[in-house]
Length: 345
Length: 174
Image (cartoon, rainbow over the protein chains, first blue to last red):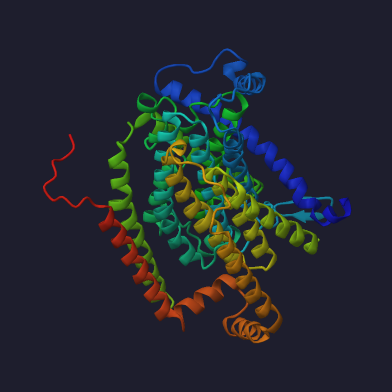
């Protein structure tokens, strides 16, 4: 049996490293969120556990694990147990498709390895497909809790997530048209050839993508599904302990995914900014550092949004999507296709 | 390796399909249906039909089953008497199932022509699977493709019309 997996050693090692890194990143994203929100509101945020609260995520993690695992008596056990996994597993699978670095990222023992697990021809479509599975976790969890607030929260989440997937899918089509490929690696390489990152020619698509990304991850100002004033806590109200932690991890993993895809599609992925200016001095910096910086910038934007904007009303939320984002995204495709046709004549 | 994956996927598809029809709770059925559809996507991966995999997951798993669940979870299940999954219709179902099986077997044994046509198409539209589908849809099949879009638009408008309340002079909700 082990022999069968031998050709996939490289991928397996990468997957293990990736899982560890992403889990760590999520843990420290929660710390960063509390710190940033704290300072926006003239507070200090977590300060007690470790220097400036640096060990807080680890303490939180231990707390999640040792808490009692409660399944409500009236809940549907099968759905209740399955739902967090349905949300959690796809959120982590996506990272296999994201190019953290180029095809020749690093050399170990004379052999060159790439900075991604898999370069699939239609990686972008796969990312969209796998993130769309996460929705199932929310609705099953909300239904299986057998309680009013989780069900209402789940219905809101699903309506929101399914709707915002449409303009999101359309907004990235401009990039696909310009790059001529759905492979994330080749999209970055196309940006390298062009010399421009796609966020400049595709500014409209970029803005729409990020707005939809914020809505897709249920974050402020689109965090209606967990509007605590109306719904207690949304689809995961009845969850506690480690099952809640899985939903929580999935949400933060999705934030990182959206940011990573945005960085890949619009900000040149692992490429260096201003190569003609900076290349003589900074060519020793590995691509994954640039990529991480870009992802971090998007994540900071998420936190900044949360500290700044009030929440939308539900009808406003749907209005923005159907009346503004969708028509603009379609217009963006038409204009991009027209310009591409004109240039390639 | 490939045969191992194929047979385990096929087994799981059949198992989950059986679970779909044997589960008493419709939500559980929908969850098992997701399993069936995902494992089918796995079979498409084995066939190198990557585009179909993506579309299968987006449309069936992320779209249709989510809508199923959306509707089912709104129904209070206790009010519906849970019927036995084997009701009076089972003889008809057996006949229909056998007919489909015979049909599939017939095409598998005699349907060389069909597969030859498929191979020919593959040669015309190139090997890049996603690009080939695009070229076919916007090339010779552009007319049926556009007709399908018009049909879908009609269905959407029809659904909106049907879901609207008939009364004109409705007092706006406060």
